[in-house]
Length: 128
Image (cartoon, rainbow, N blue to C red; front, side, top):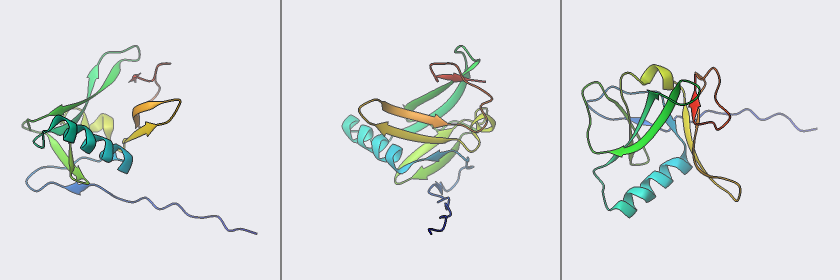
């Protein structure tokens, strides 16, 4: 008879000195993909910005893009050399969210598992 294994939540992100932090997680696969994209761009001065903005069929959409700026009120965490920025307005919507990267035959791309989303549209690009 096997005994159930307990899952342990590994805290991966590190605080960036001089900045407030956020509670968005970046999986190891996502951090590796972001690092690879930054290497392809030849830009080590960019960070991954994650934001929530009005739009989409469910009311809010996720924005993921590279940004060289750190704005007043931004929060930062570092994952395996990749800095992730979340603006102060998006922090409450993304609290506890996990960004992952999937590369399989059926799907390739970043995914966001957000415990704050009350629901999402069929395409999965927007939430409320």
